Structures are given as structure tokens and as C-alpha cells.
Amino acid sequence: MKDIAIYGAGGFGREVACLLKKINEQTSQWDLIGFFDDGKECGYSTEYGDVLGGIEQLNSFSSSLSIVIAIGSPKTAETILNRITNSLIDFPNIFSPDTIFLDSDNISFGRGNIICSGCLFSCNVKIGNFNTFNGFITVGHDTTIGDFNSLMPAVRISGNVTLGNRNFLGVSAVVLQQIRIGNDTVIGANSTVLRKTKDGNTYVGTPASIVKY
Image (cartoon, rainbow, N blue to C red; front, side, top):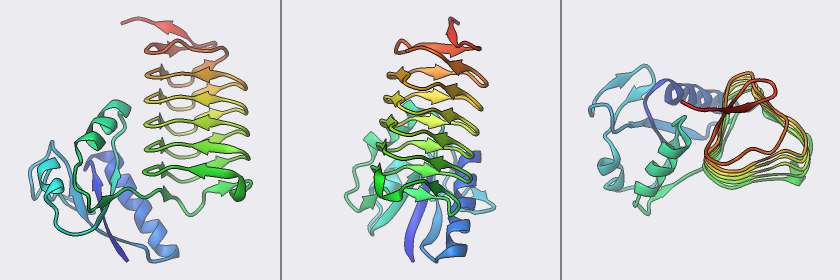
């Protein structure tokens, strides 16, 4: 078993701890040694392990360690990664045992991705780095997803979709076929994207349209 820790001791971090437990029930892979979190004191205890420190303690960790960045905010996850300088750290992909690949030979993943329970990936799908698929998500054929995207539960991505970087898709959001979503876009819960979006905006509704705050 390989030592692993979770960056982020909040609700999603604890869900990832449960996911690691499920993986180990199938095949013993991971020894969860605890959490790293800049917002909680060293020694703070959860039901799945203690907080070992923050970024300073992680960067001074003296042995090989896998890290899962369990942070829902795409920009925050990217910032944390850029602050990790320890060469002994690696970032594995974490797949729920019940993940469905319609063609496992025709899909690619980068590193640091989290795939939670009930997700399905079709054929000719290309996934980048540090994306979160937070349960019961479907990704259609010929879809490309970049880096640091957070997809909340029950998101539906149709075929021939392109998703750039640092996008956040709320619970049960739908992206129809051949749509391109660029970067830094928020799609609200239960919203349906019918046309190409403009970077840096928030879209809500069916059809999804820009809202300003």
C-alpha cells in the first residue's frame, strides 16, 4: 500500500477518504495518513484522520507521498497545486471502483483527477489534470475536458463538447452536444447550456444565460 494524504479536510475531503476506503475494499492500494489543510490547526481530528499541517508542512514532508487535492473551487485548487514544491509528492488519479468506461482503450486522463461514484465516460474522451467528477456524472463521446474543472453531482455532458479550464458546473447542470465552454465559467445548478459561453461569466437557467452580481 502507498501512503496518501488529502489536501482539504472539509466535507469533500472526507468524501474522498470514503472513496479511498471503497477502493481498498476492492484492492488494497492506499494507506491514508491524514489531511493537509491551511484553514485548520495541526492535530484537528476528523472521523477519517487528523490534519498534519498546511502547505509548509507538506513541502517539508520527507518521504514519498501521494496527494489528492479535494477542493471544490477550481481556482483555489490550482493555487494550492502551484504552491506545492516538494519533489517527493505525486498526484494520482483516483477512480471509484464503479466507474464505467464504455471503451477503456479510447479514453485518456492526465493526473490528479478525482472520479467519484456512479460516473460514466463514453468513447474518445480526453481528460486533462486535476478535475473533479463529483458523483453520477456522464461524459459523452468525443468530449475534451481541460484542467481544474469541478463538476458537481449529476452533471450531464453530451457528445462533442469542449470544456476548458477552471470551470464550475453546478448540480444537475446539462451541456448539450457540440457546445464549447472556455475558461473560468460558472454554470448554475439545473441549468442547460445551449450555446457557446463567454469566459469568466456565470450562467443560470434553461436556456442558460449570463447573470451579473
